[in-house]
Image 1 (cartoon, one colour):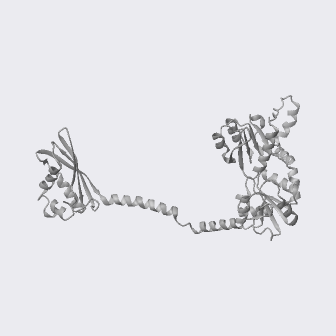
Image 2: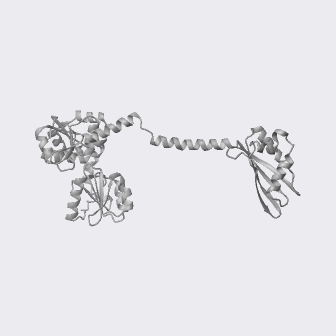
Image 3: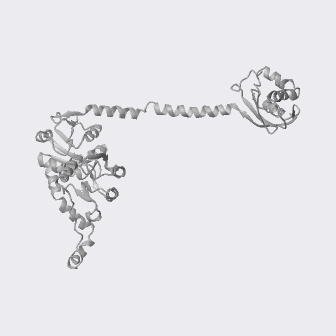
Length: 413
């Protein structure tokens, strides 16, 4: 019997056998040894090669059907390529097995090392992927992680209202008032340790006290919500300066350069109040400037008997709904979030403004959506498809007569 296993072999000879009769496995193995004996010389004698372990156990698998026998022959070899090929070719000279005609054809000589090499490569890819997923981060990632943890550790709760703030509020002569905790974190990241958050739309007493003691700069987001916070803050506290993030951006996401630029371009609190009070007038003037051709048609349109523009239908809203919408929109200012309500004004879900469309598709009994953002056409379309009755936002870019959904803004509440 062979002393070599297929695991230790370098090559494996695969052959098909076709016999015109019925024979057993021992007949096939006997024919292989008997008919190749002395054919290849003493160095390639199959019996001697098996004894020395250079040829492994010869495996024969046969199957008999309709009086004929077919099967396969497998011979593992640790010889070199040339010698293994000679042994494989020698099998094909066998033409009879027992009393039956036979035909043996070698269809493949498999290099076991190639198969093992492929397995090694695939396994190495898996190990490398696992190592890259669990490997130590680079220096920048380590520095960012340490910096982030230090920033979180530096945040303190200031005053009786326990507002998120930087560690240098008491020591600094100037204080930056922002909207939320994330804004304080971003300012800490860029070296500003004298920031404190309002934590809502109503101005806490702690902020009012600070405005009386220190030089206060209100730093708000560059959106409609930021303007509302400036109005609220300047009406109840003595704010020295006001500045805003770039249009459409929030304080929590702007860069160090943008922070410095915003603080350098800050204006006085009185000037901010004056500009906000003139905002409707300025907006109408800007529209005329942007569309000067409308001036030459403005007077004739008044003189011609054209039908008047469709009037806005008053939204059918109850006092309870109006009160609930007002309190919710005030809590959402600066969060970029949305609340979806049912007909009983219970909250069905809270999602970011960007996910309103997806949420409305999965919620079938939505009655109203209150969110911190502008009412735009795509949101109105999604609300119509979901049979939403009210959309409540900061402002609206859609005319009320263009949709069957009742549109409400902060000014109307």
